[in-house]
Image (cartoon, rainbow, N blue to C red; front, side, top):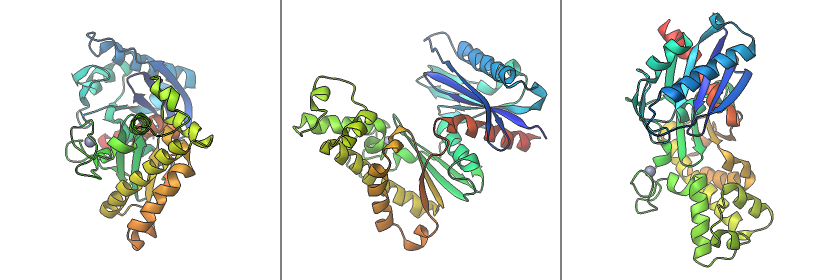
Length: 324
Ligand SMILES: [Zn+2]
């Protein structure tokens, strides 16, 4: 049995890669700039992924014959079975046959998966949700990504559009979401949405130590809001606590559907710790059925920034065995 796999986390700014063992441990990891240039087609970026794979093999001091293959976690929508990325605005890609393009360059099987799904798989395979039967993961970033892993298998939906947990509607007449619907949890609880809600409060006249910075047009992100909250800014604290409560309400619905034993939260906002988790857990504990709470754990990500590369490598092992 081949002992190693490469996991790639493809983003609009960076391409991260890792050479990973079957137990999920990372031998070597490396990152290169994606350097998207409009109008050049996908070849330059695919070439950089191939270069990164070669560098990982060289720096790990291993032989290519020890690898089962490469899995790329990519922004979607995509076709995981055929390895085609339909559309990624950040990369300016349209209908890119990523598996077929990359596989000859690296001379091994290449698999493609949705990036949020990959991170969820990573946490279940080798992270916070190890040994879980049913894991729900939320990634709090620019948007709210989601992933579901049941009995060690990703739930992709019928054609890879499944697990869009960020578009769970918590208020049918609520805030407008980037997807065009109203009231999705993403429109409230992503890191960007937190910053937007904070800005609205300040513009409406609420007092805050960040008031001058926000009104001066500075980029006040979730991290700064958390730091201000720790320094005693009441509005910042209230905004983070409200984010926790709203996330808790969305999680109640996931728990009611899936009866998971693990909900994992991923992304920089998770660093807010108790300030986010306490109000979140209060909603979950009050609103969920008692019997579902008996098995449920809500945990922060263990793999953090490595969830994408570890999860992708784990899926390379799993999918290489499926085709073997
Ligand atoms: Zn939405």
